[in-house]
Length: 84
Image 1 (cartoon, rainbow, N blue to C red):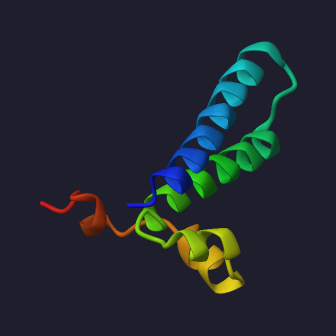
Image 2 (cartoon, rainbow, N blue to C red):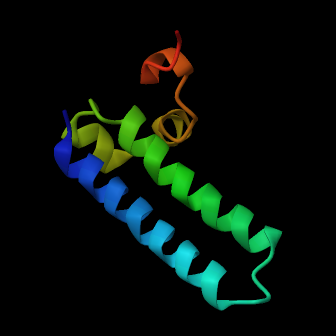
């Protein structure tokens, strides 16, 4: 498990979530477009933390275009133990 890479992406997701909560509460003009951008950023980091959890240090450091696209996708339900 690539803990360093996981922690990087979970910390990025945490920062985005904190920022989104603060902005939603403080900005009366915060709109759907702002929310879509924020949530896309949040999901990118959460998904990457999950999908790249077993990536080698060299693969995560390189982060090829192929891996970038693969790692940022939503996990399948069975990967998250959500299927009944």
